[in-house]
Length: 250
Ligand code: PGA
Image 1 (cartoon, helix red, strand yellow):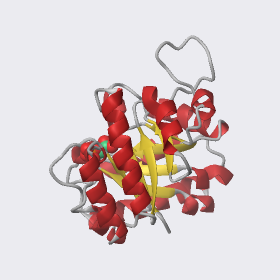
Image 2 (cartoon, helix red, strand yellow):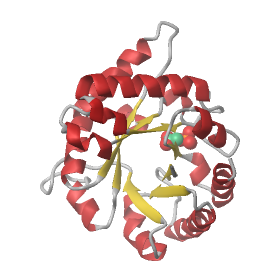
Image 3 (tube, rainbow, N blue to C red):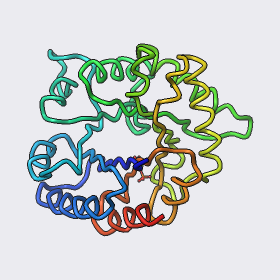
Image 4 (cartoon, rainbow, N blue to C red):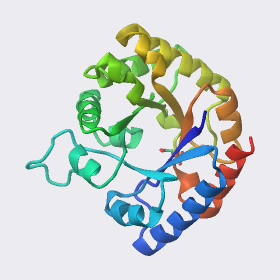
């Protein structure tokens, strides 16, 4: 199975000129690591032009956020239909940084449903903000999954990607251990199957948070995940090449 790497550029880089350069490096890394499927999530403003530079099908695109409406009076928002029309195939939904800005579980529910209706693959991010020893974080994740997936028909569960990305590992010094991720992946799969039926077995699970070339191979081998969501290590051409190199040769 090919590992899925989602390169979340967040609100970077600062100029179109740098974005083009980063994209050239990203393409080169993707061409080299043929065992990896690369999805780039740049600032929405850059997507159409990057797509025209992408030639061929090695790289596809995601939006970092979408709105659940189709068109209308929603200043500053982008709909799934507009994303689809721009050739975008994925949407990140409920990223921890957006949840910090006020996005709720109920918002993610509407966005996941809108994405599927527009034939966009939702990448639903879940994860606690902090971890305590009493295991309360399992309840947080369960609730995020329960609400976020509430409007997904069981037959569509195979089209949904769940990213476990707790806030405490994002922009941190260290990723979570593959062993802890393995435990969480089992929990996520069990929760989805219990709530929505056997089709939940086909939902893909990714890990995100401080992924780089030093930990990616091990996470893919031992973390029970189909891929990784990468922030900082995708925002620099050399770092992304090192990451793809590590994954391809793992
Ligand atoms: P990071 O970010 O890889 O820089 O920790 C991950 C993310 O938030 O997508």
